[in-house]
Length: 156
Image 1: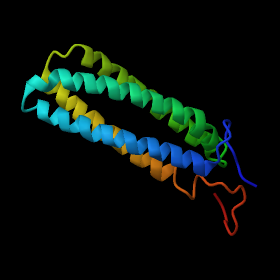
Image 2: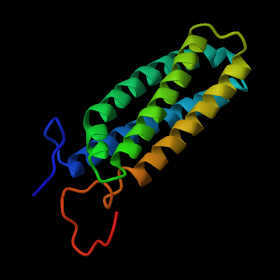
Image 3: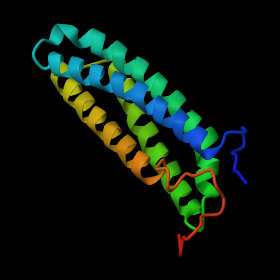
Image 4: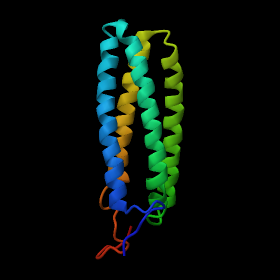
């Protein structure tokens, strides 16, 4: 028997969807980091960095909603630890949204381009780390699997 989420996707389909979104976000993050680092050398690129930050934040918010729609219900129902994992994911998304909200406000009115560029660089590294951890903890094939019954598993 194969498990499906609320929108009819199997766990492997959810894994493919979310890791695909991560791949696209990583490309944006690399470009964002590159532009942020160039602003540390040439502040004339600040307006372009602000626009890129705002665009990324919009895309990342869309991604968070996607995860909450298709991944969160599966995580919550995974096993005995599912509700704890889901609570952690909700908390992580809350912190990310708070951080991004502050960054969006700063991108609307930059007072110190160098400081802003450094904060953007730190944000990029934090999101990359969060995605890597999510992929290893929640999106791994042995965690998010299609089969309901696992043969030869002793616990967890």
